[in-house]
Image (cartoon, rainbow, N blue to C red; front, side, top):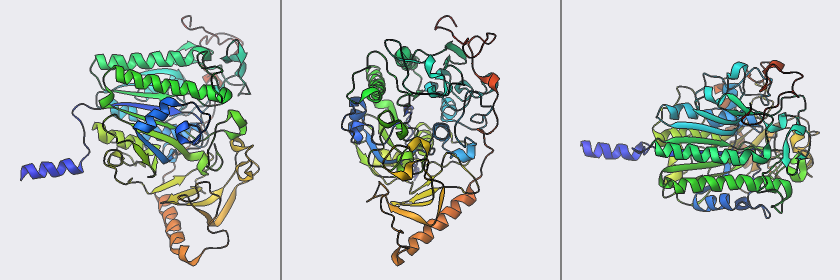
Length: 505
C-alpha cells in the first residue's frame, strides 16, 4: 500500500531533484517579438539564441505584464501583477522615492531559502531609494553588478557608445544622473564606459558560475541586459558587424552573451542540471524607427496593450530534460516563479500569486494551465482596470490607446494621437488566425453564435477585477533630487562632478 501511495505521489507532485537545478534567467530590454532570427527576422544575426531555440522549447504566445520596464520586472521576480505590488504607473527614475516593496517576496529570496547563491547583472530598474533601500542586495541577491535604472535616464553625452569617442545616438533624460555602475551597494564607476561594460558583465557572470560550481552550491543568475534598449551601444568586438546597423550590433552583442553563458555552463559540466530561460521585458520602441526593434507581424509595440507591446519571444532550455520544440500554449513571465519553485522545492510566498507551474508543459508536453491573460496599460487606473483580456485564442479589447513609444509605424492605431477609447461591445480578435489584430469579429455587431463567448468574456472580466487588490502606487510616491547617485557625494556642481573611473571611485 505504501509503495503504490508513494508512486502515486510521484506522479502528482513536482519532480524535485535531490540536486536542485541551477537557474539562469536572461532578460532582454525592449526586444520585439520579431527581432530574432528564430522568430523570423531576415537580417538579425542571433546564432546562439537560434541554437537555444532549436534545442529547447520556443514559445509563440508568451506574455509580459507591463508594456514598460519596471512593472514587467516586478512581475517577473514576484509572480504577481504589478497592480498587487504597486509598481505602476510607469517606471522608476533615479529620483524616485519608491521601489519594489521589501515585503514582496522575490524569486531570489525563495531560492536563497533553498541554499542558492544568487546574483544579478545589468539593469535593475525596480527602485533605489534612500541609502539603497531597494537595491537588489536588499531583495534577495547576494551580489549585484549593474545599474539601478535605465541607461536612457542618464545624460547621453556622458555615454560613450561606439569607438572612437562617438556619443550615443539620440536624446536622453538630460536632467538625471550620469549612469553609475554598482558593485553590490557601492559605485564602481560613473559614468559607465559602455564600450567595456558587457565584457565586464560576462567575466563577472562566468566567475559567479565557476565559484558556485567549485563550492558545490546551486546558483541563480539573473542577467538583465541593457540590450536592446535605445540608445543602442556595443563593445568594439561587435561594432559595425551587423547588416542591421547599430541595433543589430547591440543585438549581436546580446546574443554573444547568451553564447558565453551557454559555453560556461557546458565547460562547467552542469548542462544537465541547469535551466536557462530567455525572454524580454516589453515590446519594441518603434518610434525609434530602425533603431527601435521589430514587433514582426504583431500590432504596435511598447506602451500599448496590442500584441506587439506585451507578447514576447521566450525560450526555455535544459539539456536532456526539456524536449526541443515549439509551443503555442499561453504562458507568461508570471509563471516563472511558481515553475522554478516547483522544480527546486523552494517555498511559495504566502501571498496571492498570478502565475502557474509550467513544469508539466516543459517536461511532459501537457497543455498550459494558463488559458487567460489580462492586459494592463502603463498608466494603470483602478477605475478602468484591465484594457484587454485573452481567453483561449480570443482577445477582447475594452479600451485601446496609442503611445508615443509606438509612433512612426504605418498603423495609426499605434500612435500617440490614437486617444484612449472605450469599446462596448469590446473589439474581438481571434489570435489563432489573426495575431496581427486586423479583423474585429464584432465590427458589424455581435454575431448570434458569438453571444455566449461575449458573455463569458464579460463575466471573466468582472471576476478578475473583483479579485484584484490594487496596492498603493510606488512610482507615484514622489521624487527627491538628492537620491541621484553620485560617486563623489560632496562634489559640486552636480551632476557633472559625479565622475569616477573604475578602480578610483
